Length: 87
Image (tube, rainbow, N blue to C red; front, top):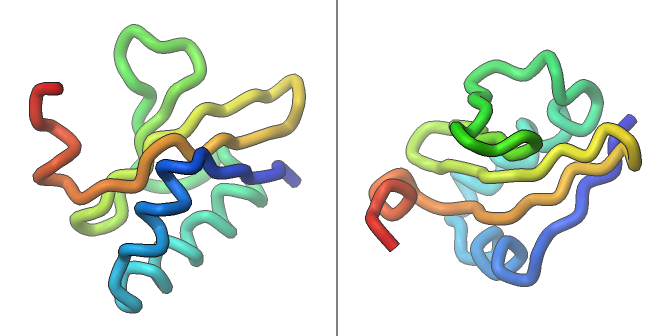
């Protein structure tokens, strides 16, 4: 089983989610923790070796998967509209 850690930014973003989204995110993160290679709605980010995007309704979770340390680092939890804006 993988360990999940959150960046400071991701923690703040998680706290801002409504209860409806929060329950769905928690359920998916539990699924991700148990087997990160068998979760639906996951895409590898282009140009990145260990970065992935998990889609949950209008929410996008960007994370780094470290198979050597058995660790998932949640980098961002953002709404879809904000995920694809140019930065």
